[in-house]
Length: 466
Image 1 (cartoon, rainbow, N blue to C red):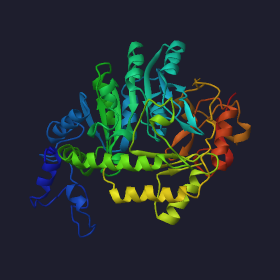
Image 2 (cartoon, rainbow, N blue to C red):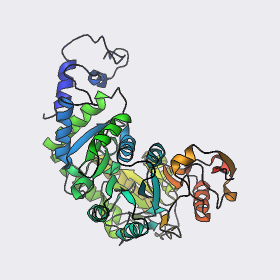
Image 3 (spheres, rainbow, N blue to C red):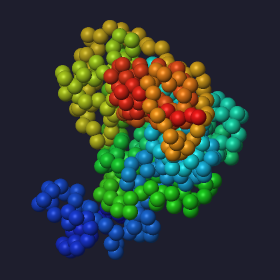
Image 4 (spheres, helix red, strand yellow):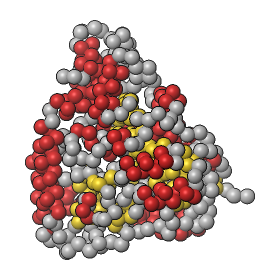
């Protein structure tokens, strides 16, 4: 198998050499009986160093870059969040402006606090209820017209629901305005393995992309990759930022298994062929349901492309996603990734058992037979397309704040982010003047039983203005 890092680590740990070094489990599976510990070593002669790779790690990263079609790929051992942190820290300086979609992950806010960069928030099209689409070229053009000092654009593609943006067009707009395009592609790590999925962002012109291998590929939690395909950034600074946010004790388990997964799936393309076949079959079944609506490219005119591995079902006015998820769990023993008032999201991967996917589709057919016809929910839209906060997230982080009831916070400067989890996407951004619509949206989510992080007990932290 052409997996140099995995092969080397496996070879080193099978020699029988006694480890008088970290990690503390000493690969003794009698105490913690897990064969994965046999791959868990540290920086030794032959195992290379993630922070300054020159041997098998570099070789494995070069093979990863070939997979995605980019200049350089770097292993991430603290998830896609680490890649987002590195991308923003390594390309922006304090006060420089970045355009950020309102459905960006919380890690973007953390990166803004650490970097001091100034965000401009762009609101994507809303498809149904609170389900958002991608950034449109029209709104990005408006952002550059109003704020020509934008240095970088961040796009989320695919979204949590599977919606894919026109990355080539967004890259063209960003580059025309001398800005970088960074793509949070954490849910699209599987794209390069099969032509039935959208093209990876770096092949479409993105300068940087982040892929979470643990989300959609058979890899352990926190396994991710940072892809670089640009001469527009200071690469030395980007690599320095990457090293800064990675642990000095990286997991060889994660890196070796990403290497092995890449090699195995490239050498055995039948797995993805069979996976796409069963996906096509079950999506054909789900498309015929009358009580729910399958989210896909043909469902909405504003969707540029869609990731068929995501099974997102819109539940409409007559049924909540939570209710549908509870039926699946209690009556069919199926646990979905997410459920809320509008939808359920069921994540699939090449590692799924095909009989279980078919069972999932069959269960939904049985449930659907008892449902009323689907009635779409009106899309909740903010009255603005672009929002510029009064303070940067970094300034807010170091400012004095007080708590007030959320319903009294309109017009005040938010001192914290308020997010829906999962996937931890903010409803209110720190540094923004809080709008009535944001309060309404937050209270609506809370009333529907969503898990809200921030604004505990209905009170929100605000900037203490003079």
